[in-house]
Image (cartoon, rainbow, N blue to C red; front, side, top):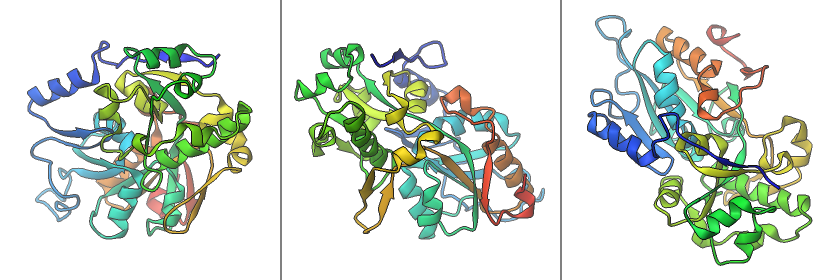
Length: 326
C-alpha cells in the first residue's frame, strides 16, 4: 500500500489561505495564483533588474533579484530571504516561462533558478550552472472529498480515479517540467503496476492547468487530486500519497530506468525522463549576488521546505567563473 501523508504547514497547521491572509494584513504585496507568484515588499516590487545601477553605497543595499521556478517560491521567499543578510526579491513562474523570459531579454535577474537543469542547455544562454536540490512527485488529494479519501486509502492510488469521473489535476507539459514529469510518472506507473494504458486512462484535457492555477483549483476543492512535487505538498499542508521510487523520479540510481520514457514538445524537441534536479545560475559576479547565490545553492534552508539536498550537492557544470567555483 502506498504511503499516505497528512502534511501540515510549519506555522502551527494553519491553512495556506490563512497564511496568505495574514501576509496581506501585514502590508506585504503578495500575488499568488497556484504555485506562481511574485512576492516582494512594497519598496522592492517592480521589474527585475531595474535597480542594477550603482548606488551611494556601492550597491550594497540593493536587493538581489531572483527569477525562479514556481515550486521554489516559498523556499526562496521565506527560507532564502531569512538566510541572506540583504534584501532578496523573488519572482516565480513555471520553469519554461522563466527560461524564456531570460532568453528573450524580458527579464534581467541576478539569479535564475529552474526545476530542470536540462533547461539551461535548451533555453537559457549560459556556459555553466549549479545543481542544488532534488524532489519527488506525489499525488495530493483532498481529504474532505469522497474520491480524495478513497485515493488516500487505496492500495493503488489510481484505482478510485479509474472507477469515477474524477480528474487528476496536472500542469501543462508544454510549459512546465512538472507537466511532462507527470506524464513520465504515469508511463512508468503502467509498467510498475502492470497496467497498460494508464497514462491515457488518467489524463484528460480538462485536468490540465497553467502553473498559475493548478494549486488554486485544488485548494478551492475543484480538484480531488493533483500531481505535485513533494515540496509543494509539504509547504502547503496537503494530504498526499508517496509514489514508489520507480515512479516518482526521485532516485538518481534509476536514471536509466527513467530515461525509457519521453515526451515530444511542440517545438519538435523530445524530453526524456530523468531524476528531478534543480539548478541555478548567477548572472553577475557582484559581491551581493555571489553571497546570495552561495546561500541559495548551499541548501541549509531547503529541507524545511520539503526538498532533498544530496550530500554531494551543490555540483557545478560547465565553465564556472572563478568567483563561483567551490
